[in-house]
Length: 327
Length: 260
Image (tube, rainbow over all chains, first blue to last red; front, side, top):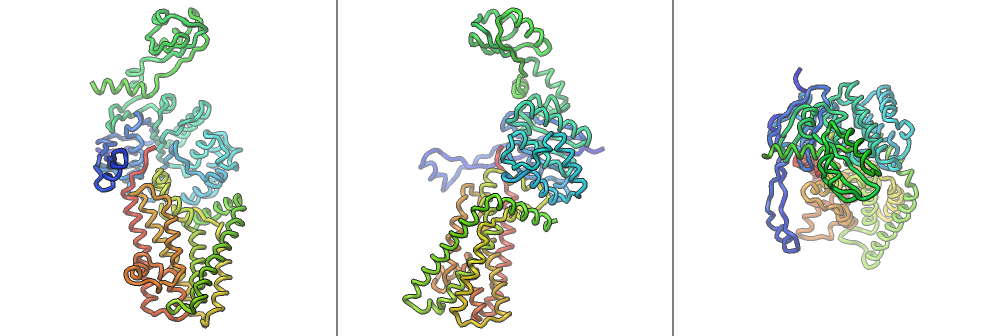
């Protein structure tokens, strides 16, 4: 079976104009602007099979969103080609657009003043979804996301998490075969994040929807994706199983500690590498597998007020990946 | 499908309008004030003369009434959409329209109807009736039909011109208030264009065809518009619409979105 998404030497260069500060700079800019070219994506290659759920990782400005925008047909690439479902995305054929969907955590597509249901009716008209399918899907999606009761509440009265769930419903009503998600859990609380994560997992599992997801939260990626593609400065630096990536680069967890009284740094050093020390608070880097054992031991031996075991962020993993890829 | 979608736009906008129904009365009041202002400003001119380059008071007021109809339609169908287009482009919200299997220009031009100024049709109608009674024009089915067609042409040119202006936002990001400028320019078309001379006269019949938008319909009604000019009006409408479409397509192709 051919891959559902295949990307060949795709590049995007943005041109912008340099402007010096101040009035004189602005005036000069008015007459002859100096062009600067920013290479957002450089000759990237990858392919994704039907039903895969792939995480797209990288720091801000790495080229993740640019790639998603090219694949969903919003912008034209400078070079290279891509095929999604056999279509060239930026030709924006209706038959292509009907099979995909894009959700951006930062952008709302629902009518702000009206209940979600009104926006869904518009979606039904745009995608020509038959009535019975529409009703069944709406019921199913809203039940899964636990927002059946909120369908008739104006969107502006919803919380950020509820709104994001509405956005997801709106994006999935036409049952897309490929779903692009750009930071779907950004700014949400832990509970909402988890509901959305479980939902996406279920959706991908049951309907075999191919999902390409970008996120800053390691938990998102860990919970959802077996495979990740890491991109930095427009170049793919890792493409493979998440498990391998984490084993290789996120060998640590972070223990965030608060003490009842000031302690000595030397006492902490026995347990692991001290990343941050502030007398009554400290952060400790400990090996992944032993984090709980070490936490238990610290609780026993030191006057701990509060303890938190944290992941090194996705950025941390990516950063250690870069330090290797750069050297 | 487009009819279905448009019906949905209509319903959604109507629900919104009902939420903000108080606006309606305020706007009706403002529109009445505008009529009073226009009528007075023209009344003052005609206190000193019987005609402006062949246009009597009734005919001039007919131009004003025609402008009210065009404005009413324009605000009802396009105003909110085209006003917001520059910021949609700058803020990158256009992305969400481009990924839908629906023409983005159709969607972005028509998705919101603004019902607050529908009173313009009624007020324009009253003014039209009053103005008409001042003239010696014989009303026939034919001249009324041509009048209607040319008014619609004027309306379509207005849309095309405005659409091209806001499409410039693809290259010049901060033009949110260009709609205000456009409104001011359009206001000039409440005068007979024959008051202009030389280069401006050429402009108001070509690049910014204010003369075609409001004067042609009234001239047709009065029976003073030549067949050539009628044909010219129709062609110009087609050219403007095609131009606006082509310009949009080029712009979207060069769209670089905004970072998020």
